[in-house]
Image 1 (cartoon, rainbow, N blue to C red):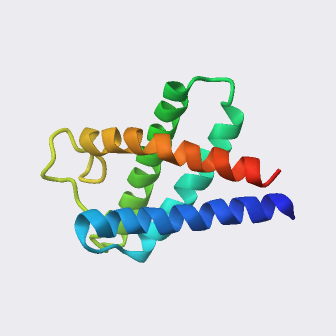
Image 2: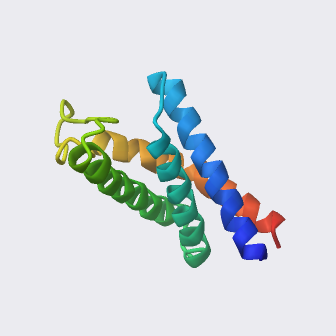
Length: 127
């Protein structure tokens, strides 16, 4: 039960923060981004636990990969398959199907630092 509460809390925080970040920078968000943000922080939380012996940079790279992969998967389903057009990076250099691009992967790398700190804080509090 304790693990369910922990991962539920992590999901809720990820959903809220991802949406708030998007509203702060784009002026709006979409409900699918809340789910994506929650799922991303749960994956980051799990990765942080499994990679605790690694340095911060290695964990940040893993988190960057996780967020980029989730963004690509969700983008292919939500934007391409369902035609919801929540976002497009089509105008960005080196984009992949308009769903991901190196610039935003770099942003995810930077945001991995506070995400890992949040996960560490939650884990210590939930012991």
